[in-house]
Every structure is written in C-alpha cells, then in structure tokens.
Length: 169
Image (cartoon, rainbow, N blue to C red; front, side, top):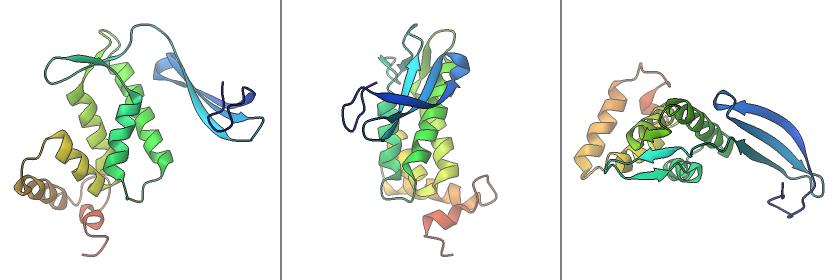
C-alpha cells in the first residue's frame, strides 16, 4: 500500500478489523519509511452498492461524498476528524447490511442515518445538514427545526439548547 504522505510502498499493518459482517476489512497501517499512520479498506468485489436518489436515478455509493457532507455540516465545530470517520464507517457498514439483497439503498435512508448521528453529536451540525438535506426554503423552516430540537431537551444526546447557544441558557 502506498503511503499517502511519502509515497513509500513499505508499510506494516497495526490493526485489522472486519466490517459489514465480514464483507470488508479496515486496516490501520504505519509507513516504515516515515512513520505516518493511515487507514486502508479491503472490500469484497461483488456488486457495487448503489444509491437510489429521489428522482429514481442510481449512482454508486461514495464514501468520500458521505464524508464530505458530514464535514461540511461540522465545519468550524468542535468535532474531531476521528469522530467523523467513525460515523462514516458506521453508516457505510449499516448501508452494506441494509442493501444485502438488492445492493441498493435509498438516499433518504442514508440522509436519515446521517441526521441521527449528527443529532447526538452536535445539534448545530444537525441543523446545517438538515437544511441542505431537507432543502429548507426560508428562515421559518430553520426556526421550526430549532424549536423541535429545543423542545426535546430530554431526548438522547444531552441538552439540546446547549449546542445551539454555546452552553448559555
């Protein structure tokens, strides 16, 4: 495996973990030349997981696209990259399990998984993602969503209002 930092082909595997019921393997690697640690994935090359869009168009599942959407939502928020990677791994694994029969999963299903993860992680990121995913057309839709969050203070994930106003209530 080529090191993304120094392009060396010499590395060692530090940890291996099975994902998606054994259909893929996540490996943590360390470059022998420079010591940089990185992650690689090995997947069974069967049929590619497809995402069914709202327009019934199908496109290949893109881990990078999923990660980019989450990164946009948490931008300038105190969320570590490791947490983003963990969410992407979990959603990808759930999608593979969900799509076992037909190798397809709906974009709505994926979006709902991201919203669930962001809701418990960071409420501001949740509202950001929801505004794009649900295509908010005006400020009233933002207000409605924020009211839903702040009225559900007892919901999993802790105090809803704390994230929305920097912990000051």
